[in-house]
Amino acid sequence: MTIAHCHLRCRLLPLVFALLLQGVLLLPAMAADNRQLRFTTYNPPRGMEGQMATWLADEAKKRSNGQIDIQVYFGGSLLNARETLNGVKAGLADLGFLFVPYYPKELSAWTVAEPFIIGPVAPEKRAAFFWELYDGSPELEHVLSQWNQKLVSIHVFGQHSVGSPKPIKSLADLKGLRVRCAGGYDALHMSALGAQIVFFKGAEVYSAMQKGAIDANYTPITSYYKYKLYEIGDNHHLLSIPQFTGAAGLITINQHSFDKLSADQQQILLETGRTYSAVESSMIVGLEKEYAAKMTNAGLSLINVPKDQVLAWAKDCREESKAKWLEKTQGKGGGKDFLAKAEALLKKYQD
Image (cartoon, rainbow, N blue to C red; front, side, top):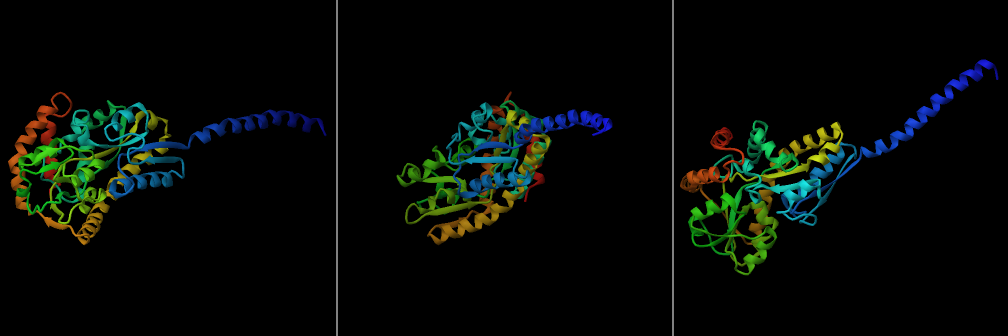
């Protein structure tokens, strides 16, 4: 070996060693690019919400080439419905499904559309309304940031319904009946029809209705099917209501968990969340038809409430609902201007 070769070898050895060392040090960093996130939802795997939770997990994993691995905990197995907001804040779960009416004080600004019965019937218009309201309203983002969370997606609900083993054939037949609903403005609206409001968790409604503790349940058609309430009794009736209740579901992520994602992963997750709303909206109409057919074939009587009845109902309780919202949200985000902004935007998306 010549002296020149020896000198070249001596110069290259440190370089080769440095490159090897750099490669070793990069291995943990490369492994850290793979993120496993725990997603808690009180919903069961079946039904719209369960299907979409699975879709979100699968789609995020596909788009990130396996880097984002979302593990879904169904049926409240990690956190129940009322624990989710605090649980995600504390990092007990990375992502959570929040049903806004369960948090009227904590997420007050997000309830701004709930006082309005009338609005867009088409689910895709509802989703577009909520996203436009969010994009143009810093107060909505601020509410979530106070709970150490960031918005991933908005979940809208399909056509509402109220069903019973009793022969209800119009909204007027609800007067005096014990009707279970999620609370909040749903309760106010049902009360305007003369119903007596009772509260049960979604998973408890079947047993409560079967035992006669409640006469009827007010919920989206997809949820009515999900909980198999149509099986109860020999003469089950379901009123399909062409209305917009304003309630929404949110999928949020713990801010610290989000910050740990790379910039690319953050973008993928947020873009997947936007797509979630579009996919879910398009699925609702098809599922409603499918579920309505299955319930009808099982013996349920499905009745479509005429729109003029819904308009009269909305007129009876609209101003009271708006006044209640202003009173309850005073000093918690929103206010008259925000309420007026939401109302004007609803008119833009009106069917």
